[in-house]
Image (tube, rainbow, N blue to C red; front, side):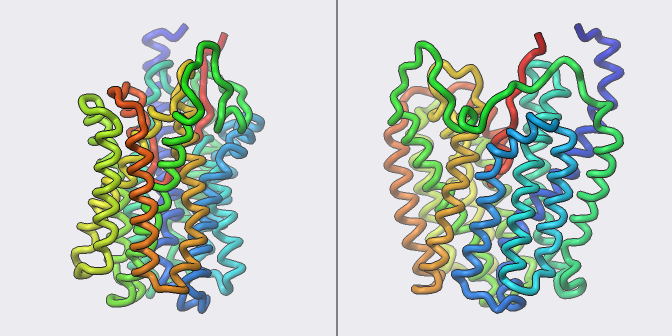
Length: 428
């Protein structure tokens, strides 16, 4: 049993561990998001077509999401600390070398390695933080952890763009160096910060994504499938808008203008804030009456991206991020099956599996971009995916949402990369 004195002794170590993991999370998510505003730079350096760039983006974000269930299994087998260090080093090696890639094949290899590192880092770091928190009080540290990652996704790409012309292939070195240093500190110090009162629950990847129904479960499979499909469509629409906006800006402003990074930052930041605000709203308004209008708002805003002045694009991206990215955490409660004691499997289905499927589908959008142009491909994809997602959202349960929605909104990353953290339980 933990005493007050013991908790006081553990607090500084826990705070130091959070600081180390938070800084590492900022660098990992920042390097992951770097590929979006760097598309124009990579196109010049690699002489890549729009379709090839789109495939590169899809490979990067898909690796960081769909690999998480397998990564969570490795975390349970080898331990969170080893996985944090290994994941950080892989993310450093992959994403850090992306600006130096000399060919499309080298770029694909870089983002695959970086995505694998991101997928390994997130569940391991989430497990460490959950393990150091008191039972039942994991939400706040995970929310702060997520906020730091969102800040990295917003700020690091801008820094890389600002230094791309001066540093060239070394533009990502500062953020990558943070990960190397953080990995070294984590290897030396974090083990002493672990609290012994929580240990991981052994689960399989299949159980994480599609857990077996518990006794007394009455929810029909279609009721779970609808939010999962809606989330995949929302993720596709959001990624299409978020990846296309910097490319369109580059056509009029140049490939290294900071506004390219600001547009990505606006989307990420609005998604994080919008998710929390919408989660608070669904405590008073039926879930489907919040999700459907929010998705349609984000869809309408995304179609305006090619038609506004460059300086107004970040403002439009705020609406896109709040409406589309902000809606994803709301679907966690809708996907949660009756009898599930934890929202973690639903988080994995929505913010892991669905987001990964949406990212994977972007490879097809990239082919359309080359055939008909960015503007047409953006409009058709966003409208088709957004309207279909809104119609699916209208099939969601009409009741008010519980606290799981707010918890998911607080503890999720904009890209879904923080979704699949290993659940924890009290030691017997």
